[in-house]
Length: 110
Length: 102
Length: 138
Image 1 (spheres, rainbow over the protein chains, first blue to last red):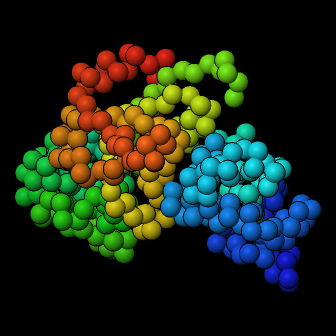
Image 2 (cartoon, helix red, strand yellow):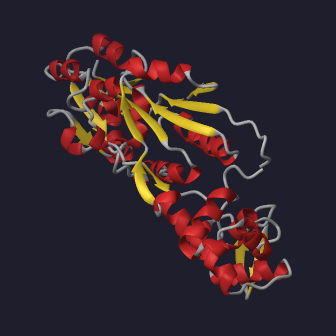
């Protein structure tokens, strides 16, 4: 399966996750969000960028509990809670944000 | 018969390495690959066995497998030659036959 | 997770070298999944399992994913107890400084990093294993 954005083709799996993390760019992230009906703003990008950094360092997408805790640490307590993250990513912060970040579905995500 | 033996199991896991050494003929070659590269490190329980066998056999260890496991090339027993994939192929063709100890 | 959730003590015992078999990677996946369910998880590295934590693993040459950096995330998953078998290190001519340092962050102390690593004898390991609800070996 593939996703066409601005004339560029991105290989994706049946759930819409990028097949190859290295093909990711901001365009494909934006396009995925628009397709889900909610364009990305600065708050979304804070989380997406965090996820990409986390993956770079640890080679995994963090479980939602880990994501929440780390966001709280890096971006402030008021953002480190599931209410805030679910408002940003209503389909589930780990699942949806990981998809936009070009990462595989988080380990432990059922 | 000029034989190349390859071993791919850790000597701590099973007896492949020790069996190979005990059944290897003089002047044969042994190539340690995958988890068997652990055998050629200094200061392990098996170091003495490997060192004393070096006078009878040529011993080689595959560099990418050492590096993958974080095993420092500086800690490989002296006399064991560190080789890459190309030399692995050369060794295979230079010997009359290859025995893989699984 | 509900208030009355059952929390059990899980210990994962890692006994194999990485890359030669799939055990090390599979264990790590199961560990992360268990920890994501708020269970009390500890890890033991014994026998060839101690090689899983070696520093400076470089897997480009064998074409496999280097998962050694993932162990550093264990602290984020609230895994604060990592037991290293002293005798296994000694048999292999290794010392603790050959292995990665693993830490967890204490939220109550401004995220101060605390070591998760415990160097233990086999006799101690035996006792610790007997205190677990579930022990799984890989």
